[in-house]
Image 1: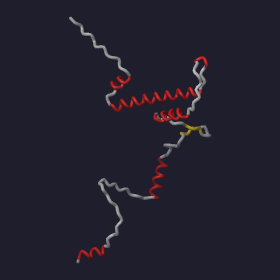
Image 2: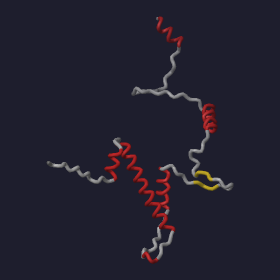
Image 3: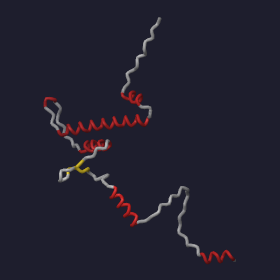
Image 4: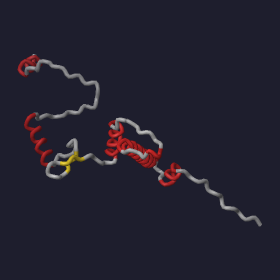
Length: 151
């Protein structure tokens, strides 16, 4: 009698586990892109931290003189992809997001729409067949056109 040995599964890496967990390719790419962004966030955060702290001399790592501007822009850019925005403290102790993006209210939007209607009423015509030629021509005179047809 032979006993069947269970097949030993190969250990799967991170990518193998992601493929197994989700069947959709777009979902797999979304998960992978999140991990890449997290890696960049951790890297840039670490570099920024090292730029502002002084390591103990016992470690034997020489002090690096670098301009953290680029790393800070990478850090804030990656944070923005996760929906985190920098804030600025107002004089009254409250915080306001920098850049002012997305701070429009429904009333402000309605006011802008009404102002646009009053200043420049327009109509959009969509033509889906090409080619289209628009040219200026003299309008036809109804009296002369009727007379020429009756003769």
